[in-house]
Length: 501
Image (cartoon, rainbow, N blue to C red; front, side, top):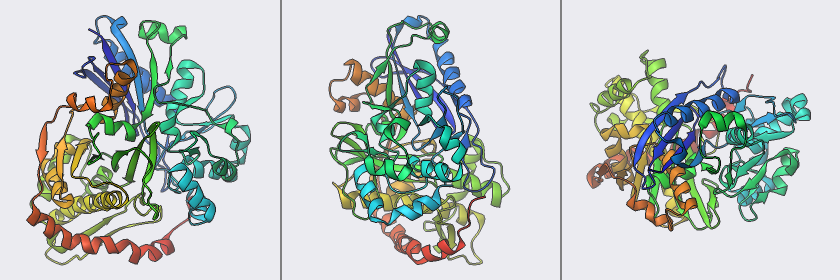
């Protein structure tokens, strides 16, 4: 049997999935690592630790394969927006600053509403926000001048992994297009962005297509993995783009929804969506294949915040998640008029405001902890519904949502989303959607899939949820209030903003 390995380098863990050439999942494993958050606005990770996690999961799944030389491809997915500085010897000068690090907020605010900022958004498809490497590099230049002076390259975590494995600096079009530094029309580094960041293209890796291949020649890794010397390591794409492929949301009327630590809803498009309000992103998967949509900072991490900081409950297991769902389900639809604006960690789409705050509105003496727990689920779902509405306003209609991420363990939340969206929700493959997307990309690169539409025949549907129109109309009463809150409160959020220490 021939095997394909998909490796997803995520924010909290790296996962490896092994399949046959027909997409049948055979083995999977994952390795966790911490996020360093000493105070608000900080979010760093140790890149060496993440590289070791990649090696660890590769080794673990390879031990399950009797004949390692039957592995015919390894393909990679990775989280977007992370950046680190590295010197000319390949030694990290900083930790990896993740998408959640917002210390560059001052530089994002100064650029966002200017003519240059609007032009950069149009050319790159990446919103002006402190998550982006564009703003992070500008922050490093001003706040960490000694680091900036000695930086040879600014790279993402996948670029670091490929440098360690292959001794070259390359970045796939997909990861590059989420930096705010990459022109989605020319597939080259964007001149306006480089000027703002204060760097040249030489400070960045060489952009390559998502099907680009490298072969291991370093004896340390060839001996460690014991693979066929010619097996291709395919660079792959970002986790968000590959989640689309992994979930099977391939048709124009379909979108992919992921809720893990954060949340996102995306769809495939032949060109970037033209959203004049700047609510959406457009990232490259391949030529004439863009992933468009929006991402929220506030997914499952908000449940953890409420459970641990308000209810003093540990929230680090499947049992804790199930307990949260069971309690939330006891509250009535609409949470008794309690509405939650879920911007506990600031927000990306659709408002792109790192200073945004969380708000409970409508509290009264009848509300219990269960009302608050349900309001949190409804608030997160309302925020994603706003993104979905922006997508439909900017492109084709959507009638089917493919769901993935840790939240699919809850039928209650899946039905709640189906009712709020008023869309059919399909739960597809049980394995990690981004890792499966990497495998499908490898299958397409090697010719096992001739057309992307063939992915649909490989994706297994485990459950389907249909919307209840009566419930949808009831949810809309609260959503109408929810959708007006941010604009009313944005000036107050700005007045409460504090500089990051």
